[in-house]
View 1 (cartoon, rainbow, N blue to C red):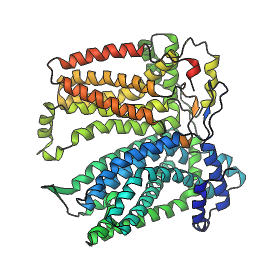
View 2 (view 1 turned 120 degrees about the horizontal axis):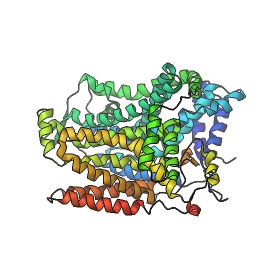
View 3 (view 1 turned 180 degrees about the horizontal axis):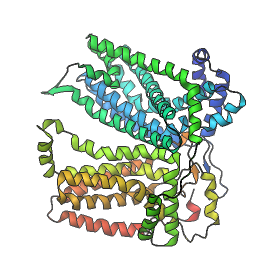
View 4 (view 1 turned 120 degrees about the vertical axis):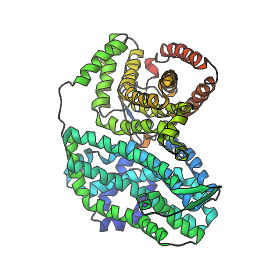
Length: 549
C-alpha cells in the first residue's frame, strides 16, 4: 500500500492518540486506506471503458483556489493599522471560510454511517473509528489551511518570529476548534432528534452555522471605533462571545506589549476552549457513532402536496415528456437525498444573506431604519441582488454527484433521443426547487425596501442569472446528473466555473449599473438578455454522448 508522507507527521502524535484510548495502528491503517481511495474517481454511466487517473488533480485545483482567496485575505495584515482590529477581521474571515468548507464538503464524512457498519463490525472500537474519521477530515482541512493561510504566515514574519510562531499555532487551534465544535453541535442534534426530523434538523444547523459566521463577520469590525483613520477598541463583556477576538488578543499583546485583563482572558480562551472541546469530543465519540445509526432510520412518506404540485409545474415549464421526466426525477432526488442537501442547503443559506450584507455596508451611519430605507429607495443598491448569482456554480456542480451513482446505468437503457432533454429538465428542477424560493424571497424583501418600481430591475437580475447558469454549464465538465461519486480529494476542485462566475457576474453587474443611467436602458438590457437567453438555451445543452464523463 502507498505510504503517505502526512501519516509520518501524524506518527509524531502517536502517544496522544494512545493516551486517549485509541488503537493507533488500526486507526493509521484506516486513514491510509481512506487516503488511497480518495484519489480514485468513479463514474458509472458512459465512461466508455476509460480508466480514471488514480491521482486526481481536482484537489490541487482546490488548493490553488484557496491560495488565491488567501492572498486577498492576507491584505488585511500587510499595512499595520491596529493589530487587534486587523487580526479580528482576519480570523473572522478565516473562520468563515474554514467553516464553509467543512460544512459543505466534509460534514458528509463526519456523518457517514458506513464506517461503523463496515469497520466497527470487525471488533474495532467506536472511539478508534471516530478518531480515524476525524483525523482523515483534519488532514484535508490542514492542506486547505496551508493554502488559505500560507501568504498570511509569510506576512506575519514582519511582526517578529514570536508573532509568526504564535500565529501558526493559532491557525492550527482554529482548525481544531471549528471542526470539533461543529461535530459537537451535530452530536446534540443527533441526541434529541430521530428519523426524517433529524435529517431536516442537520440541514437547519448547517444553514444557521453558515449564517452565524457571516453575520459575525459583519459585527466584528463594528466593535471598533474608527475616527479620522484611527482605530480604537473599548472592551465590553459581550465581546467574549466572538472567537476571532480570542485569537487576536495574544498577538496584540506580543506586538504592542500592552497587557490588560481583557487581553489575558481572551488569550486564555483561545488556548483553553479548543483543548476543552477536544477532551469533550473524545469522551463522547463512542456515543456519537451510536447516535449516527439514527440516520439509517428511513421513514418513507407517500407523495406530499409539494410533490403533486411539482408534477403540475413540470407540465407547464417542460416542453416535452422527456424533459418532464428528468425534471421530476431531479426534483425527487434533490428533495430526498441527504448527501445532496448536506452540501446544497448551506450554500442556499449564504445566497439568502449575501445581498443584505452588501446593502448593510454603511448602515450604522444612519439614525434609524427608516432613514436608511429612505436612502435605499433612491439608491442603486438593488444591484446587490446579484449576490445570489455567486452561489449558482456550487449548486450546478453538485448536480452530477449522488450516493446512488451506481444506478447511472439506467441512462443507457432509456430511449433518449438527445441529452438536451436531460440537462434542461434537471436544470429547470434546480431552478424551481432551490433557486426560485431564494429569489422570490429576496424579491419580496427588495420590493418592500425599494418600492414596486424595483420590479423591472429584479426582472433584469433574473434574466442575467439564467444567462449565468448557461455560461457556467458551458465551462463545466459535462456529466449526466447523479452519475458520479464525490470523493474527498475532489472537494471544491471545480475552480474554473467559480472564476468564470465571478468574472461574468462582475461584467453583468457593471452593465446593469451602467444602463440605469440611461432613461430606457434597463428595458434595452432586458430585451438583449431575453434574446441571448433564448439563443443559448436552444444550443448549450446539446451535449454529445461521447463527450460525457
